[in-house]
Image (cartoon, rainbow, N blue to C red):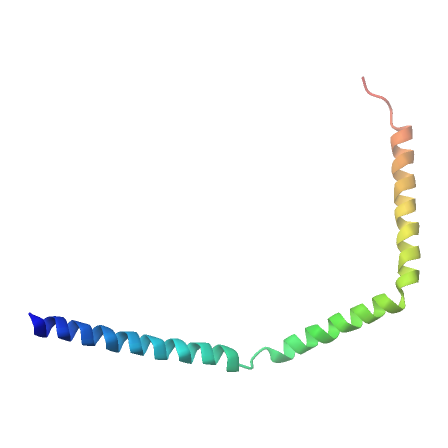
Length: 87
């Protein structure tokens, strides 16, 4: 009986060690895999350009948004004022 327990113990230790090695390999692959890096760089560059444009044209965009929302608000108020009352 002791031989069976010893065999089971040794087998479990080997499996645990092999699992640990496999896990280390998988984690290493995740951190060393370079596929998709070009896409990440392109996205970062595009975000940078968008932020730069937002900073450069901040005042113009602000004025445009105020004008647009003012027009939308005015039209909404006109629509509410001219709507027939329902009772």
